[in-house]
Image (cartoon, rainbow, N blue to C red; front, side, top):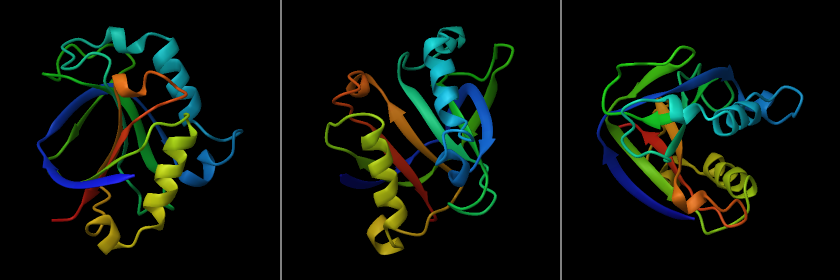
Length: 163
């Protein structure tokens, strides 16, 4: 897993959301994220989003943290847009403020194993290994053409850092 520290500008997104936590997501009977991902991709929801900046590049965001990795958070799946206008019914907007990030990129591997492994490694890192203290404002995964093959997926995970 490669790491890079960077600052990103504000990111505007349109997508769908659910409130959950990591404990619930570890159990198939209480996890909400897999069904949201299925609905988003197989329901053609991205095609309903207007003004997409990079069609086919999906953001999966963890935001509105109650506390830390143990608390509730909002899971958001959608795409970056040029303007937060023309929001389709049933969709929500999210603006991620400009902040510093530790960006992690995996070696090609099977989904969802590579994503789960990346998160487990990130959760095990102390602040110096991570690149700083987590901000718990917004963390996100980016899925683009590199992740199109589920047997050899490459994705980026961005972890928000305090300044």
